[in-house]
View 1 (cartoon, one colour):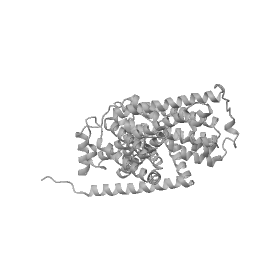
View 2 (cartoon, helix red, strand yellow):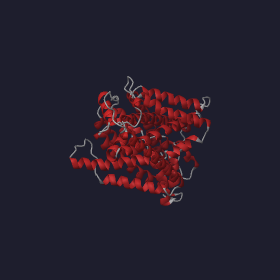
View 3 (spheres, rainbow, N blue to C red):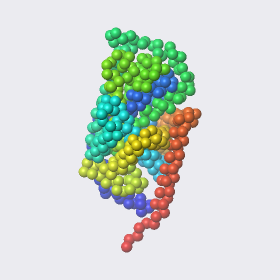
View 4 (cartoon, rainbow, N blue to C red):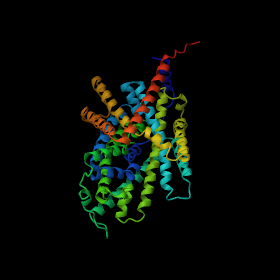
Length: 467
């Protein structure tokens, strides 16, 4: 054992850990709302335009993949709740360099996305509050959520709980209005029937290539679900809380995503330009006054919720990296609320710099950064499935009693790996997706090389000798 490892072990043994004040109610709602973002409220129309009504197939395939990933992640998180989550599991399965690379890659993705979400939410709200400058709103959002994250996980969890409630309520209202519209229950509004499913070039007007193109769009909409495994480390009863949150994944996807997209493809023709804001298009068809403003507000809430969650996830991943000696030990310092305040500030600093640069150089800074991290979620999910496969086989060989076991192992895990491999192959045949994938792979390779060099230098360092 190296001196560095010994020191890290001693730190873990002597210093107080993160707070455990998040409760099962908060974690469950976080799991429920984590994948309900602006990608659903505003971006789902892109998938519909790519595949037509057959986008439902794309959502079912992507939904199946998310369910498998979350089942695997639930098993890992219940066995070893850690703020480093999949980074820690990758390290256990494949070594320090792989685990650190996954952790730093995910951290970099989140801090970049924080800037995009702050600017995106401010841009949306500028149509409602045109007198307030976009830059002021964006930086105000970052400041507010920095304060929330610095005052403890309980406050963060409570904000995410109410954000999730608002998003879920909005979708339930949307589904109710959509059902009334489709069944002809609204006065003075004709039902579209099933015509839009088949009357505009058929169910799959672009064929399988269109379904594949939509799949590439859809799979990224589910990013964010993995943050439940990070938050599990700060719950009083991780096994029960994670198990409950994971169980909500199946019906969340079926009801919220598949249900919403079914309403959209039934009501709005897939070639319609109104799909730039699909939820607003449905509500406008139903002649609901103020539909556009309502969707803008809901989408802004979704972006702010994601900003809050990503700042939380980034700070906890940085804290975990520091625990393992891959980030400065000063990051391990906790405030009275047991929150890693320096990790929060360092994570938000990158977001602030990116936000300021984007505001001074619009459409030049963030697109380049987002392109770098565009395929991160695929690599993170791959690390989850591969780690779970290796660690589960090891647990079964050694007779380890797992608190939460993934069903149908190894078949479901292998099916998930197969689906991910298929998506990665499809990405190679799409110009924009290929560029993103290659950029992310290049970034990952650079991060991995840096981690390997850092570990090698640290391991070569002579052990300190007593005076």
